[in-house]
Length: 150
View 1 (spheres, rainbow, N blue to C red):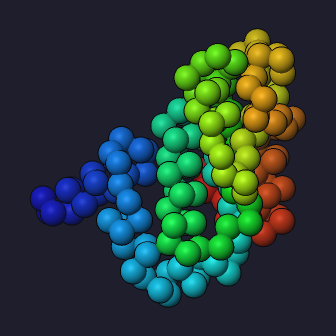
View 2 (cartoon, rainbow, N blue to C red):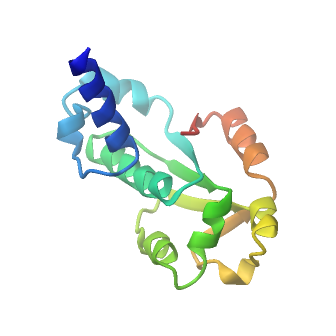
């Protein structure tokens, strides 16, 4: 039981970006069938409601690519109070603007922006908007994306 708790705790920490990790530590690079399976669908979407989710999405993208998984698109759809934390000149806006991954994009829910009283002009230049995060995730799923909402 203790081992199960330790494994579960490590998995949670890795998912939410609290500890640095490499693809070798996750076994992704050494698992050829896993890489082949993941490469069958080359488009990914991840829902994010915290800064930790946003950072974990970037680490996940990097792991996939470093392990040889083909990634054509990786969309991070953001909603909720975290929208306040990604306005211009914030640490998270700088983080997102600094992500130099051609297949990766960030989208923010306009409904969340309205609820948080955030205008488009207050967001970083690399952040796009969508009218409704949930409908956008449904759309991406309908288009064949692998979709995860932590």
